[in-house]
Image 1 (cartoon, rainbow, N blue to C red):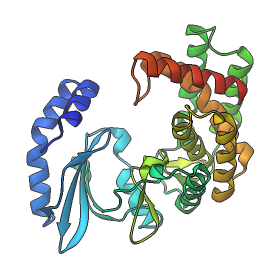
Image 2 (cartoon, one colour; image 1 turned 60 degrees about the vertical axis):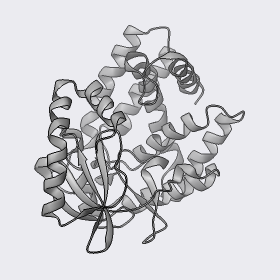
Image 3 (cartoon, rainbow, N blue to C red; image 1 turned 90 degrees about the vertical axis):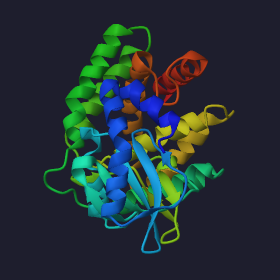
Length: 303
């Protein structure tokens, strides 16, 4: 039932803890299907940290998602509950102890499947605006990441002094102080990129896989930018295309474009160092990682 690719990725990432969780996972899925009166309805899939089981309940299509237990996944059901289906899939059931949810089924078509970059940016921006509801008390605040970002920048500049000009690092540190430490009290998806936006019958597009932060919605613009930078890396006019998409995203999200650009600048500087330390999800080593790190360096300096 569990795809080999998910098994390998989980054990590589989590070690013995991941292996133990995987051994319990089939029984967890069966128990949840019984409790929530669901039946299998398609091939099992997965994301980076969660198993996705297509099911039906009372003739309604849904998916059972069971994620590896990790604090970073804890507020995903809270985000779905806060949105109540507004721009995101509906939450039907939840078991927080098992990091499991029964969700509205959407897709399989993703926003990333479209070819028109400006259309992709407009859809993502509109969703960002709709998801920016008042932040509940008790949720993790994105501003609490500010000290960690500052430490990463200073450590990266010390470890890799030749990578970025000191002026770029100093500018990123200013952004941490001016934007990251004091943020709006709005719900932020936290991982809003085109692969996490699915076609739907209830609405044209719905978001999945939120992190569930409270902070600045412009942060989601930098997450969007990161995914599109990878997608456009091979194109001839990649820089101009990225700039245009950022403007379209900001306009659709009703955000200040310069604020989004500042968040992008910070994320680029962080990525330049992060990529050298541990790679990226799609490239942990080899030529692809080398080429993307070089691309990130260029953007961090020119953006």
